Image 1 (cartoon, rainbow, N blue to C red):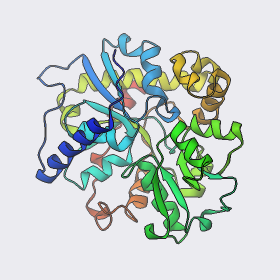
Image 2 (image 1 turned 180 degrees about the vertical axis):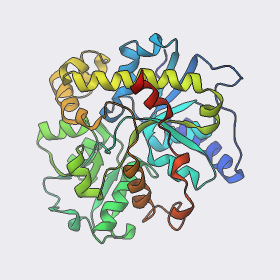
Image 3 (image 1 turned 90 degrees about the vertical axis):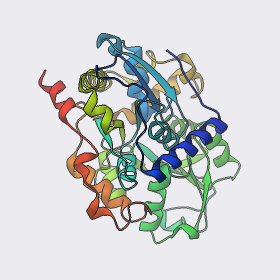
Length: 350
């Protein structure tokens, strides 16, 4: 199986193709086509080493794809927004990324559907620098706020949280800080005053003592406090045409992913870390730090892969308040086309 980290130039090319597709309201063929259910599937992940997307790599490592007779090519992009463009451009069959992209894309004439919902909370934290002078979201005005990339879910959530505190987008500076080492460096050298990130980055900052968590959306309580309800996030989503044409393949993917969710819920961070590539721990401050990062976030994952319907409504409510593509269009969005529980409920009954 290949592991692909695409260059910035390649990502730009994908984005350009996606823009042209959306502008023309066209539908490109998926990477796998044909009448029969394919056994080879390509999936782009918005950061394979991020704990929020842990089920992707872990499912492969545990051999659950192979158990289902699938050969899955996992590819990686540092940003969920870039992963989304690869799907829209027809370069991959599916994406492991945030559910909110399915709503955003529907307003652009694309039908994208979450088929396995890994988590009903974002798994994100807003971290502030020790000397940033930020004690609450009310202090974000005038600050430099880090996100992974423009149009990413961290961008969406940052706009919402700042707006909820009364800060419009021109009242602060948005900085593309990425994740991991680039995010940590930006926080340490003053490139950002605060930013939204995930584990293992959050765990590394905690251990280094260079920042503190302002908002913790790795738990249901923290998510409700920050966003007014649950916010389904990490998921496996695919083009609706692929889902309709290849239900057998999608069911096998659901079987594999739900089995992994059960594994996560029944094993410790150390046990899970032992299954993952060694370089994930090496890039996260070592095995103990990586295991601690998994333990800090693994409670975000549900055990069934089933979407929380009320949570989906809350995602739409949040996006409709600031996302220019969704604002004013909430009433026209058909949430039933943005996710399905058909496959995961069949796993639960088996």
